[in-house]
Structures are given as C-alpha cells and as structure tokens.
Length: 82
Image 1 (spheres, one colour):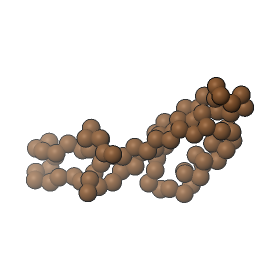
Image 2 (cartoon, rainbow, N blue to C red):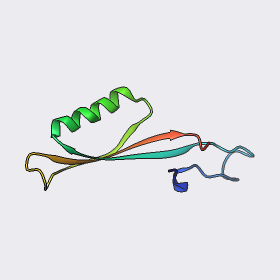
Image 3 (tube, helix red, strand yellow):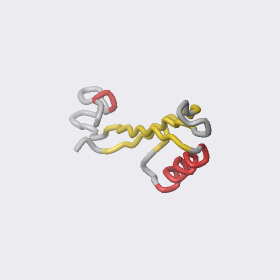
C-alpha cells in the first residue's frame, strides 16, 4: 500500500502546474532463523536489487528458539503513483 504521507506534496509548492508522480513504498520482513542465514538474505537483496534500499534492520534473540534470532527488516523503494 502507498501511504499518502510518503508521496511528494502536490500543489503550488512545486514547479508551476507540474505534478511529480512519485511515491515511496515500504516492504517489511520479519524473519526468524539462523543469524548467518538472515545475513545471506540481506546481502542477496542488496546485490540483486537496485531499487530496494535498506532502511532499518533490527535483530533480536528468538524467545522460541535458543539458537535462533528474529530480524525485522524494512526496505524502501520509489515508484510512480499509477
């Protein structure tokens, strides 16, 4: 979904009579498993996708798996409103 707060403002604040058709979209992942496997996931996204940019990443111990971690990862991408 596109959050209206993530789009550029429309109106007189921009160049006269020009609307910028650009929206920021967020992709959120919550991944649990082995720390190294999660690292491979993040590296693969960075290498394979030129459009996704890492915004946030937090890693915590998994309370259900003594050997695992839970990662919350957020990527941003920009595209048109249409």
